[in-house]
Image (cartoon, rainbow, N blue to C red; front, side):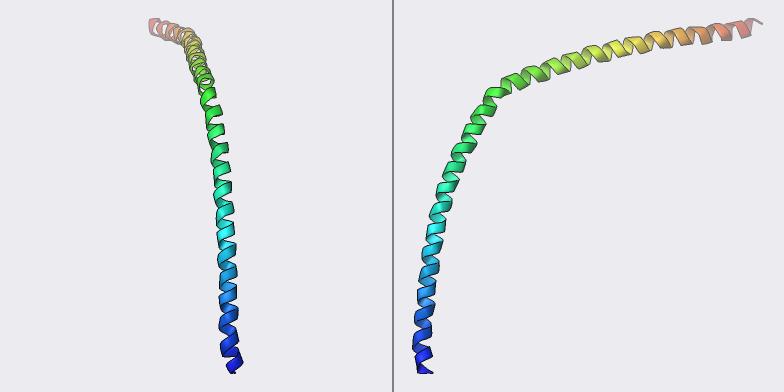
Length: 98
């Protein structure tokens, strides 16, 4: 029994020292990985910033094309509605005249 009381704390201290060393090694590796990841994110951010002008131009062009097609569609709808309403107005006038 006294053997276990002397031997068990030594084993626990050795295991704690091993866990502390493993934790320090993993912490250092995580720091190196985060530094590399930060460099990659900065590189990607620089590349995206160079494309922002292109995306702005494309957005402006699609907005203008959408505006033109909307106006064209409104014109066509108005033309058809005028033609249809003229026919209906003429029919109502003919009924009223009779």
